[in-house]
Length: 444
Image 1 (cartoon, rainbow, N blue to C red):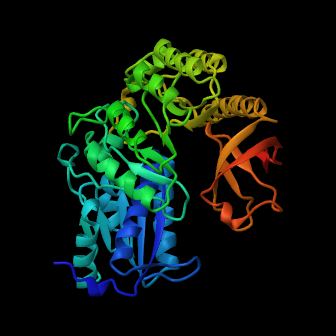
Image 2: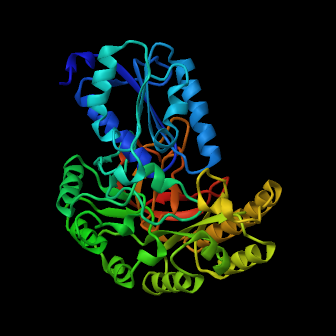
């Protein structure tokens, strides 16, 4: 039984590392605790409870998680510290040995955060409790999440886990096999977001296109159902594997009421030989066909692409093939990740190792290519009119928002208004801001 009195008048601080899915989950944890009487601590205020939602996609991510845990314990010495997320699932014992950590929750257990927290917090015997012992095949719970935290856009978790087991990746071990809730339950969450005043929802998950493994439904059916929710004017799909991005889905998005001309598609490598080493389920020909289909239907679509460089087996020739492939593609932005060796992955059996210095050089080349493509895409829209959903500006920053096709837009300080937050406004797009990360705009 949950002792709600233990939560009353307490203050909590939240720390999220990693992806949009983690952000969505953390926002939901905060909402659950708020309903129990827990307030969110303001910046600089010492908290009674600290919740850290971790990532483990790379070795660097692991290091950042450990740094964050130590910093939080140091800055909140009297707080009850909870660690959850992917790193907590993969390294629960290691985290449990960090002084100051009180509770570690794995992938199955975080859905029952309040129950586990209540039991451990009420006992308060100074001992660390670790609940993260399930093997991948036994991770079956789905923790619903639809929240915006302190942001303007909502993040709706539609799927969790992954069945792909690419050779470089630990995510299936951290989050389990692919699973999802029903379309009806997700529509209900979107409708609740609309009642709260939400206008845009980002669909999040680990392998979203694999939606339906639990319920036998299809991702396209989910998209059609969400498109009918009144009040939600924009949807964005956070990431779709190319082999699961059907032509039918592309065609639907092109004429959809609310799904934006904005795609994020993980490529990982533009070399067919490297894709085979990674055990990816497509080749460059299929990837190029998907890009061509999107551009034929939506010429101004924003297309972001994930690329990993320096993976085991990526010879100089394979990297050059990757670079040439990406250079020729009509895409908007590259998200470049240097390969990081992860314990227990099949990639460690591939003999050729790329030196860190060479990984950095390859990353820099692709990042430069990305900047060129993004700037060219933005430049084509200068002088045009667009509809922008504005977001609350952080202190000292210009108010910004995004067009339908995900061009970041900033307002001059003299035109920024607090009441513009979560408003869709027509603007005329001007030139680049100082660091070329956005176009300046004037409200029409």
